[in-house]
Image (cartoon, rainbow, N blue to C red; front, side):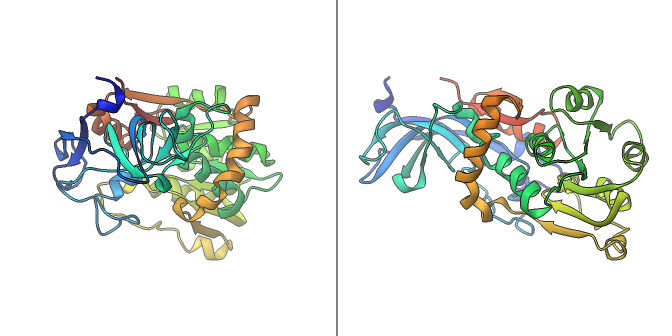
Length: 338
């Protein structure tokens, strides 16, 4: 069957809302007819899709900051694909595009809902990682939400993940004197130092975060990029110097469990610490500026990235479960083979 004749495709639907930890049984794989595009639309066969921690939040209507997923409906999220049928002259067949209808093999979209990609400056999959929302999150976090200044000591949690691994490297680009990252296990901790260029790595599974951070930064820290919350946020607050800055990017420690605030929160008042939240959807206007810089950094080798890849749409639920338990190094992607 050629691309234009594709008439069925598979997609992942939410079978049930998770009660606590997310399970593979909360998803179902369904084969469904693929509609043909109407006027001004394109049919895209997805080649790559992203899985991200925020997708777990969208299964909890009480905390979702995007429209919550609905039981019985196909999920969505960032994806890359190739146009295989087009009724929009500005997006011809064969064009590589980025869009929001992941979690399915084929998608029909309005031409205005897809972004044409320049694959001469980077690979398709890079537009879901270092040139995608996770890379942009790291950029906004270190330039605007908790700006890194020359000489700062910077601490990044979940530093081997898609956001954290980029944030640590950008902190170095912006003049940090020392960059410290936390990750789970000795292999990831070594990766922080040897691949991503962190000065010190904390294995949060091996000993107290607070004690290890005190050793890594005996004079304190100035910036904390928080992807975890919980114990690591408390340790960062204790270690922070006066006038420090915290970017609240994620709280993966709270997924599937009741969230609780840091017990030492009043230290933020005593030290005049600033903590600011970051929802990357509010900053998409910075994509052109960021991609212009990051594509050069990738080409020069000053920004190093890794991906963890699952193959086939049927592996997408396991990929998300893996992200939530820290199975990935760098960006977790699903390659939609075939």
